[in-house]
Amino acid sequence: MDKVTKAKRVILEECLSRGMTFIEIDTRVEGVDVLLRLKGDFALGLNLSYNFVPPDLDVSDWGVKATLKFGAEEYRCSVPWTAIWGIKLAKAADICLFSESVPHEIVTALQDRARRKPRKYMN
Image (cartoon, rainbow, N blue to C red; front, side, top):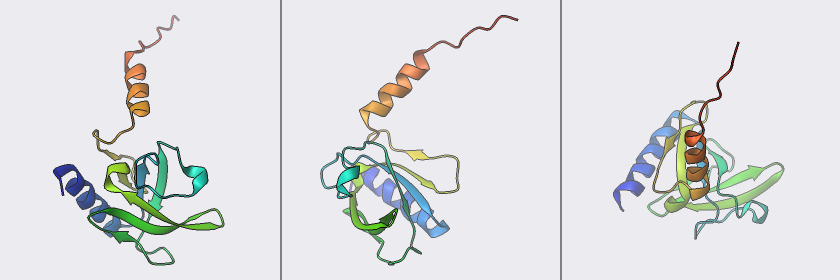
């Protein structure tokens, strides 16, 4: 397990031990299995918890697997570590980003935003 993957696992497990955890994933990454209508989303957010029913959350060296609800629909999702680019406690404001995994669309948008000069207002 490489350093980035190990860091993701440590942070995810720490967050999960504290409660509901939110992960940002890129569904286009090989190995991701989510509802077909969600495939192609580079910024899909998923809530994870050891308290969900059914209690089948599995965090392994491969990644994360859990049965999640999408409205009234349940689906057994599989997310490899390479697809996870952000992790945070659901109630927290700050997110831990993994720059190696952030989709290029988000990087480009942030770079464009940083290049824009603030507007000057006259009184």
